Length: 428
Image (cartoon, helix red, strand yellow):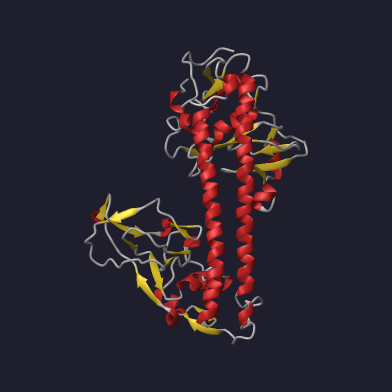
């Protein structure tokens, strides 16, 4: 096998037993694998599709049904450790996503938007190669070879020749496969740890969801099924409107001329992620702009207008320690002395149902006057505080677990950058 490039490469981090091994170089993907063209025909197999960032899953699992129909016979047949390239752009993978098929049953993917290839096991370990594709090795190569908007029937126009020219950094010499396996095993163990932590997060969220159903009255009832001991004999909860519980603070309308590199932070829907305020995709306006109303700690930020209907109603409580901020016109603030209890009400099915009733079939906004009329059953302030403190402590656990997962993801990303040669150095 001839190398695609004479330039020798060295990763920043190498396991001790390979520090004196031969350097790395790059090969074309086509030198390490061959395109799979075998069709299903009359074979009995399971049709698969891809979820970006997850991998290959059956159509039944993803869509709740099989959509292959009569076209199944033209699907590409996969075997264990084959790769499938989905030529559909996603936000994380604009040049398409490549996944490794890890199953053992007969499987297939649509020939219309997939290119499949099979690595040579004597040259490259599939798990090693898979980590490179997760790091979007192919996207970095294809981005200058796929025209913006170049689509045919919804698929990116990527020909197999370009795909097979993707440069793959690889250890050389007699220890190549051993070093590949060491790297793949290291990253796989980290993936296993991430999976375990994600399951723990999911369990915490499921536990919280179950508690919400128990700690707040169900439809047609005036007391919750689960009540703290000191409130077992307390009065029934009373139904109140949001207008009785606090006030709404409308958002700021601003123009592109008001935007600055730094200044007054404008909170938008993108700053609400998974029930928390996240400062990442930030917009700032000039500090002296007219009409800006301050967003304060313990205010509840609510998305009331958005192009995506699924985002309407999402909310988060503004924490202490925020920089000077206001909120955009598509957002509103609910301000109340009972905010830490009300934010928990906003996680209940009762809130979701009232938002859904407002939206209807075509409306992508909640009217402020209507929002004020949302009603909830409310206990006395003493019981509110106990419930809020308990659920807030659980929210803190969930936030800490989410942060642990992000730290692990960043650690893996850093490891990938060090265990493989710098991708920009890889050329073909």
